[in-house]
Length: 186
Image (cartoon, rainbow, N blue to C red; front, side, top):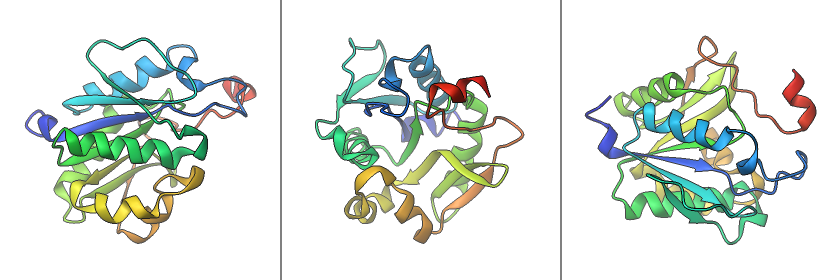
């Protein structure tokens, strides 16, 4: 995967207010560093963190961008992430969320490999058949994806129609989003 790393930009979507959780998830425990490490160690040459509701000090070795319209939902973060990846001249974008702390580099590596080897150029982790993150999207999809983004659904609508390849990763992680504090106990 080392030969691909300069072509893949990892983007951590961490702009939300975490309303159901009670606070922005970008500030929870070690979730943000865990997501950054998963992308970096999983094959991304550079990592972008999209913040919004919570502003943090600069993170060494990471590009931090602000989704000013973060309250619109995940779509705002995805738009900012795609824009920054395009500016960085990436060929692939690996979208990851901050609230799946058990997803590690081995999951990212597997999904990147599938996206890069598949003619569709788009792959998504799944866990026991349930769609999850990361999602890796080739540059050729970005222009078509952008106008489909709205609200808190992120790229989900586009992925349903774009020929996404599901990559089973349930043997590596649970991939469960942690939406409420009670989810931490499960």
